[in-house]
Image (cartoon, rainbow, N blue to C red; front, top):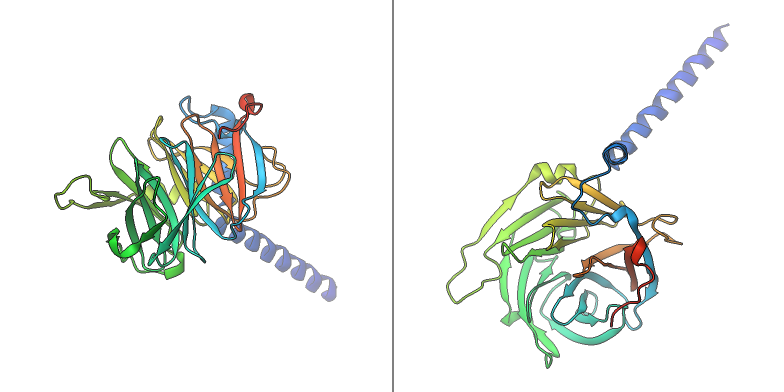
Length: 309
């Protein structure tokens, strides 16, 4: 009887430990918040004005970008109708066609560890340097072949934390001249910056705002990229670790998700390390993953449309 009693207590102890472990994993990976979001979406159908990411399907997936090995970040240039990414091991700003073909490569000198790039206005981009926590404003035209960090407009945000868990994503709200900067982890947060880059000759007046409530509602464990939907004033947040793209509504609450795992949205394989996301004027979602993989997602009713060049 005593052995049976001891065995029973052992099983109870093991079961309790298992429950605690699963609860810890669920909390740390934000599974509970994600499950609650999906349950709520099932009954409410989600907001009317959103991208409707649930209906997106991969039309290009895992296409290697020939000649690149360490892509990070992505942005859409509406004037040129092209994409730009950065590489950090051999620092370059690279222009891509909308089907992931290299159009040109611009050498980056003195940019440290470039991890983000964002289109601001015709010819103006911001590049983030994760290692030194810098934002660098650059100008390019059709003849640009290299950029020198020493001549770039710079803003340093010394926010502490781990140096290689810093600025990973950028997005720009053109209507409000507001730059969003994603801090990857420790802490995972999004900063809103007004006044950079400058729009005139006068010294800019910089304002930095945080929204801890919004950041706490993000059911992901890291931030690897951002983008801004200029039509709906919605922010897109990409997580490499959580394999997830989340759309945030104008009230900063999640309104949609695109799951980057095999079997979802037509993906035959899980996106290995999502590092950059960009949205074009038609709502097409472009994504890059290390080392050099390119993806395109469109709504189910638009998947038959060919990629623009």
